[in-house]
Amino acid sequence: MAILRGEQGAVQFAPTGSGNATIAGTRSWTLSITKDTLDVTDHGDTARSFIGSLISGSGTVELVYDNAGTGNQPTFIEDILTAEDPADATFELFTAGTTSGTDSVRFAGIITSMEIASTVGDLVVATCNFITSGAITSNLE
Image (cartoon, rainbow, N blue to C red; front, side):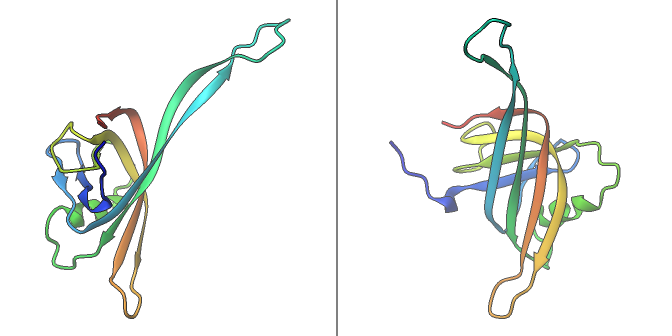
């Protein structure tokens, strides 16, 4: 069993779904996936039965802010300013490396909020929250 460290992870993003690029300064990412369930219990049953239904996800990406605008960071942060967002941005969250389709989770999504914080004695950090839209593909190994 291989042990992964958080610093091996990465995030790639493209605002229009083509040509994902690594987000410079990624400090952390989280992804929560939920599956709705439907009650399919028949009249007369003595125990409930369920089936899986719609799947959705949400999460965050935390970045060490880079005011020089290197990498894909400005594009990622500024995606929050896209009104009537058609959810055509692609995300790929990696547990290790940056080889597309390897040790990653890929999906289309929308950045729903962005917070930037500047604290004395600390780095300037931007946190972007997102929701998934459509299918979520997992290549976790």
